[in-house]
Length: 277
Image (cartoon, rainbow, N blue to C red; front, side):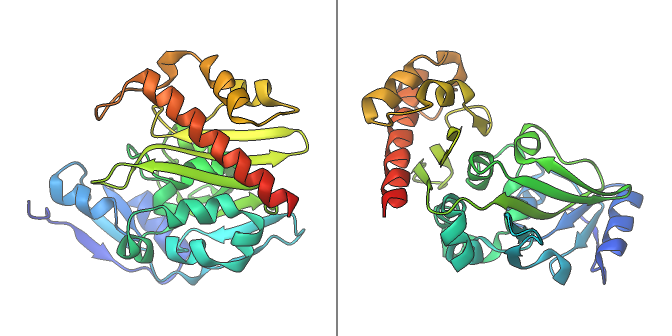
């Protein structure tokens, strides 16, 4: 289909972008455009105004927060940059692995972490890694700055007129991993899992096999204190209600429940190995 008509503006700063997004009916932010433009072309979405935020320097960059306990990853950081950044590889390896698993090189060079986290209706890879990392989204909107847990962001859309400015990720070192089985045609996950091993026990999140990215606290509780062997992990997943796993694309809930258990056991094993080095 041909794109419907819309207006376009490139604001000089974030405040101007926020004013346009909150004050213009049908305004949408344009960053990587990997989800928005195909949806506009297909008619799945509409926009009266595209606010191009791609050149806003304040939304770029990867570093540490002032207290040094978290990484601050700008929302316009591309998936390719996230996948190869030395600080992310050392302190949040599940995010780097999720970025590497996303699409192909063209997608990773254009797609941004903000767009990936906010891709409503799509089982993208970064939200599950953000949940396992216990990350926090930093938002700017007409009422000022705020933070929202990544888990809350995964449950619903960001507030209207707001812009995701950064992802704040607790530094974990190597004790984290990501695993995925991808749909061959779309590269979206049939099932993906991300884990972090913390002093309080594992954090485990899944997507693709479920209706949205979810922390599996029941599985976490059953595995608290270990062991993280395959048999123990599969038993923990078998105790989850089957209706948690959403069948589709030729898969059954039973198959998905087993697959996510296998991937989680593999991810936990890799995280343990990295921790032991």
